[in-house]
Length: 155
Image (tube, rainbow, N blue to C red; front, top):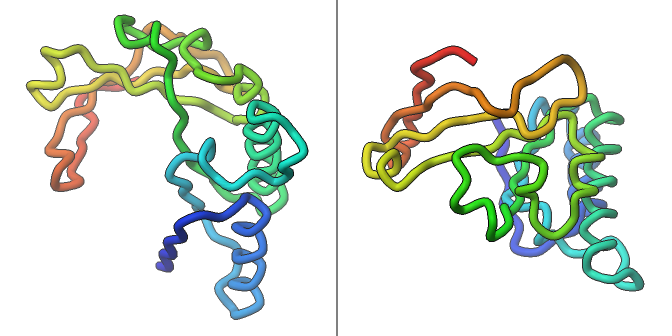
C-alpha cells in the first residue's frame, strides 16, 4: 500500500509520479484516488476554466486506460440537484463533458432525514458499458466518521 498527498498538482504531474513509482519497483497502481479532479492545477493556462477542467478529465481518462487502473475522483453537483431525490446527468455542475470521459459516475443521494440516520443512496449517473437505471440503487449505512460504510441492499 502506498499513499501520497500533494497540495496542488496537475494530472500530468500525477502521471509522472506514478511513472516514477513504477521505476522504483511499485508497478502500476490498482486504484488512484483524487480528491476532486476539478481543483487540480490546469494542464494549460491558455484555456478558459471550463476547458481546463475538461482537459483534466480527458487526461485522467487516458491515464486510466493506459495504465489499466481505476481512477476515482469527485465532482460537484449543481444547485438544482440539492432538492432532487436522485442525481442525474443534469445534476453535473460546470461542464457536462465530464460524462464523456468517465467509465461510470455514481451519485450519492441523501435527504435531510436520511442524513440524520446516517443513510445515503447510490445511483448510476453514467455508465459506459451495460444497462443501468438512474432512479434506483442501494442504500448505504454506516458510521462514516469511522470509515465504516456498509451496503445493506443490492443494486
